[in-house]
Length: 101
Image (tube, rainbow, N blue to C red):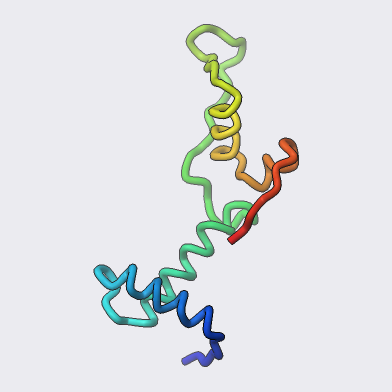
């Protein structure tokens, strides 16, 4: 059992999420909250080490060859780096501002 006081905005967000999940979770508020918690853990757990990365990094094969080198444009190289290392980590190197939400 748990009690929480929600402000108007949070209640509206919870109702929106419940409506978005109604096809899978029905009207079970506990299931909706559990899904929200799992999404939060997935999103923030990677940078804190609580969640294993989805992909493992390939072990370098040694000297670069035409078989093991990828050439990407700047944007796709940054996208790959963000997917590999996380947006927060890469923002330290790119000077990009993060918009968390």
